[in-house]
Length: 434
Ligand code: GDP
Ligand code: IMO
Ligand code: MG
Image (cartoon, rainbow, N blue to C red; front, side, top):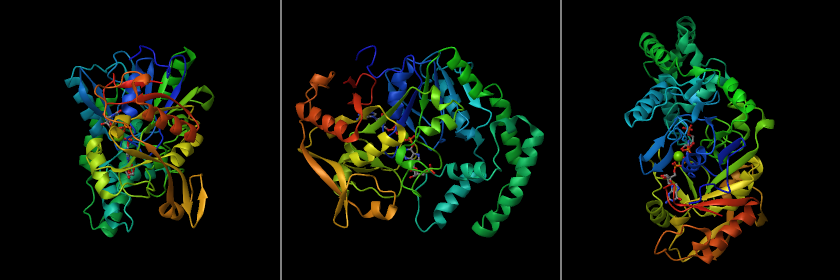
């Protein structure tokens, strides 16, 4: 592995986004690029995310809230205002890091404007799913209800945890309305003010040292020519606007979300990198045109260890959909792609790649906005020859089998962005520079 990647994040502010339905391997890439930057900031989502980093020292580490760059000593890691924070999960994550000897005390910051997930958000998320005709398959972490409160302007923010009077007022006001809904609509007994109040005031005390104006901190860092990595969670097709609505998450997962979710202006962003798997996966419900048949999905799921990093649910698996990746390139302004898990395709006789869709006899290459159409499209595939299993892990681009290189070239042409790195294993060293 070269010391410097052609995909570098030095002297620039870079956004990393998922180009599919999440779990593309963003955690690994963020960990690798973190070495080159000064600050790493999460800008949306919450602990619905599960970002895996594999290192020799820490083995497998899964981050849900804290940026995946935290394992690199001296790097400042922020949770931006666009994130929804479950303090219970955050505390657990901080304690776990302490346990393995990672000191975060002076290099971890939380935006005072980030919204807080409360117990009623978690329960409402789960209850809503049971009532829905068409389930979304949420992670049940309270993400949607918390963002909903943010938008209807009754949310509680990190800064409120530092002010007992404000917290009391807001919580009382919320519980008054919510408990009635819980009882009448969901036949749930509702929530007790004093235990939540006590618990969350305590979080305020614990986190007071970390809560600050992170947009000021980030913008000052930019003035000082520091480099920032913006860590996206989920993926383009889980975006609240551009994803396969309603089978999406509740935040802006696309590159634009990085500015809204941090308070850094778009003019300060230099590059957007898209992370995509060499095939496609999705957790939860919703359309998936290139999904494998159940039998083959099982084989590939085991091969790729496709089980959710947050909920452990089996991930649905399918062929690479380049109509989607091309759309992601456009929506995010992706100039470079990183292709993950190419090794999972090793040993397949032939590989299919979706180049267009067919609907009611008509062929088209654009991602449809009508869910009805997407649910009923027939993928148009190009079939390509596979490659054998390698005797030893490929380390440089030339080590890759010519058929694997042809596959990557086809993907690059179809997606309309260059591939700058290819990943062939979960460890840092299993990374090939193109
Ligand atoms: P994220 O949410 O985008 O960060 O991705 P996840 O961590 O949820 O899922 C990616 C999974 O694939 C993790 O278990 C990684 O350790 C693993 N992984 C990452 N890159 C590779 C790769 O190139 N090959 C294989 N086999 N596994 C990988
Ligand atoms: P990372 O960052 C994959 C999916 C859920 C569900 C939908 C809505 O690890 O890539 P939510 O709980 O957000 O309301 O669920 O979004 N989902 C993810 N799928 N990776 C993720 O995160 C996801 N976060 C949410 O499975 O379908
Ligand atoms: Mg994940």
